[in-house]
Length: 201
Image (cartoon, rainbow, N blue to C red):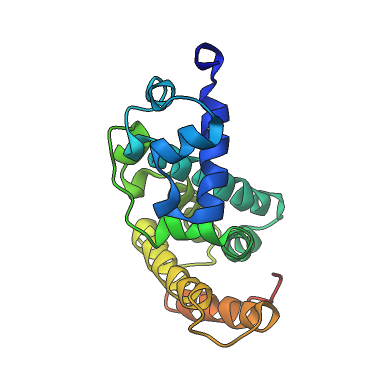
């Protein structure tokens, strides 16, 4: 069985283990037992636990990017930026464990290329920077530094979402969504934004 063990199957099983037991529940020995293989069979595909965790995080970012890409169907830069914010929240609420391991827990970098990547180079962050650039070009926002604006927005939405996921805000999803979206409009106001976002999550 070890000879035909596929990397994608290992990653799928590891992701299930993570979703069930959290980050601490993912071990090479535990995963091998779950898959009924020897730990050495796993080490042929992943050099260590940290590399495996890095791959799980990379999978989470790929799913996150699919959510963000839904915004590209909107017809104006302003709508694409707003829907990006909606999709950020939708991903976090639909995949809270993945969100937590991606943005709320320390994951050792290990030796994987994914782990070595800078956050500023992540496709999901570049997606937000591009939406800011589009809005600047359309005159919707005023800024000479789209990356700083993107970082400001990310820090703001991450703070709100993290508080909500941690149970620190006694609100339902339906009640939280419009507060979250209005707060984005408030932050964007510092950069010349005039529109008020409407709840869509």
